[in-house]
Length: 169
Image (cartoon, rainbow, N blue to C red; front, side):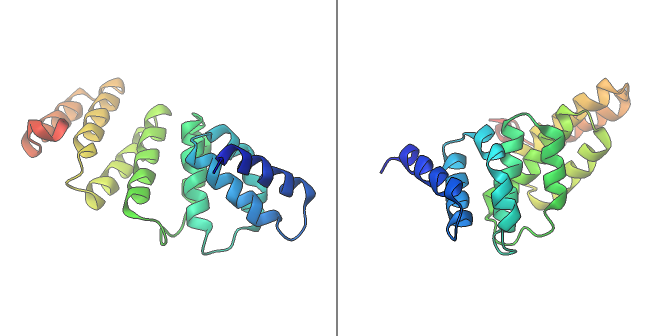
C-alpha cells in the first residue's frame, strides 16, 4: 500500500468530478492528514467542506483546525474551532487536541482573555492531564507579558500547590 500513490489517484478522481468527487476528496484529505501534510490538507479542504454531511462534520473540522494550527494559521484555526458546535463522533484524544489547538493558537496570537477561558475549559474537562500545569505556566507567562505580575505569581503558586513535580515529566 502506497499512500502517496493513493493520494495522486484520489486527486485525479477529484479533477474528473462526478459521483465519487466527495468521497475521493475526503479520502485524499484523510491520507494527507495522516502523513501530516497540513498545508496540502488546508489546500484541499474546499471540496470536502462543501459536501460534508453532519455526521462527518466534527471530524472534518478537527482535521482542518489541526492542519491550520500545524501550518501556523492560528487565527483561521480558531475560526474553524468556533464552527465546531458538537464534538460528538470525536474520540478523547481528538477532543483534547482541540483544547490544545485553542490554547496554542490563543497563546501565539496573545489573546489572553480567550486563553483564560480555554484554559478553564481544559482544566474542567481534563483535570489530571499532564498538559494542564504546562498550560497554567504559559498563562503565567502571558500574564507577565501583560504586566499582571501578581496574577502571574498566583498561577505559578497554583502549579506548585496542585501539581507534583512528576506531573511535568
